[in-house]
Image (cartoon, rainbow over all chains, first blue to last red; front, top):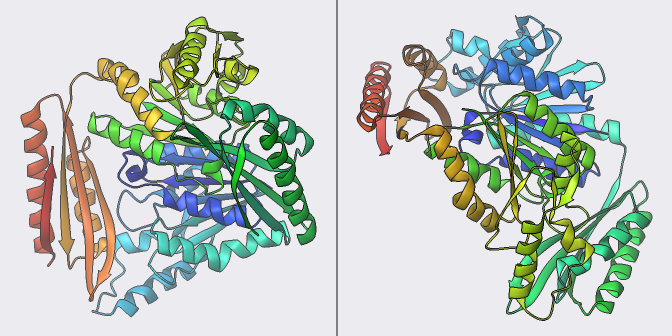
Length: 269
Length: 269
């Protein structure tokens, strides 16, 4: 299964905002036993959005999660960009319009007028289904294009998370089935990354489906510190656990042979 | 001028690490008066790196900053991916090899042996120039391809920043000339984003080159809070300052007309 995030927003490109949304989605998918294959960030610009969308669809992901640019202001143009990219019309969706009307009604203060800016949030690419946004105004959107399910989410983190949890996650689980993920983190002392390299290379060759990666943590008081992450995924809980454990033991043994020590092992499942 | 970041590393896709490197580079460029047009994040995978590189070169950026995957371990394959993408050979660079040798010599402890893993960091795509990494082992690389200057930087933040400041920034400034950036942030109370929308739309039409963007900050005690950012760039300091100020005044006036209040104005230059 392949999933991508397309993040829209100049604030992400000019270093105003850190892309914690993509990070959160990435972690969420990893816990479900799958992973993002790509994150793309583009400007609030029709050409950029539509171009990036088309590039992504060429890579045929199962899920394309588009985040940001759904609001009422003129720089919010994600739906327009998607429509352009797909060469579809934008049409007022009556369900989406109802959601927006209800939202402003709840806010009270007689702010019921559906101005042009508010109606814009209900203009969806033809064929799209709105998803209710319980914590904000702009609805999310689901839209199937070939094998890809496009899902738009608002850029406000709590709204994004709420729609992801409430709707998209179900779709992903359906496609994925139940998977068990096991993570082991080894904290190593006194071995250089370059000495660890051939050990990892060999281990990766023996376990091709397993995620094994080293992160150098610098040198403290003359001692080189490295963290090694091992992540296994399986449809069987026991299998995932056993595999992670046996790789961890084998790596630890080889690190010890090279004069390194294992400072701690962190496991999570 | 157009610049892109290509970030390489699975840790960024599985929500282990937040992509603060791209954020830092984006902010740095914004302060210099230019901006990133795209950030792409891909996995530690030859196919993915080479494919993303080729896609980026098609968009003809002036600068393509590739971050991460330069180290000695087998999952570090950025240089290999670039070589593959450009259909160039990897060749041992004697200058790079010298840098790596010197680094391990400084670490002392007789760790002078240039193992296969260490030599790998000196295997550069044909035509590339190494840049010294004063805070770590893996050199950066500069490589011109058509109108694009490709620059690789290590993923370790302090090493990345040091090489960026020491080498790449000079190249960017040379291309860019001296520019003056002025930022005004307006903090607004009591106006809905949807009511602000037509005001912004109109202002953006009047000042097409200026960055104007609103960020909804939620509703506090029944009052809607919004931040508006105005960023101007000019070769003349005075021009940049005056323009930002006049847009801020005009926006403030119109917000007041709609019943909103300006809570505070933050300026930086």
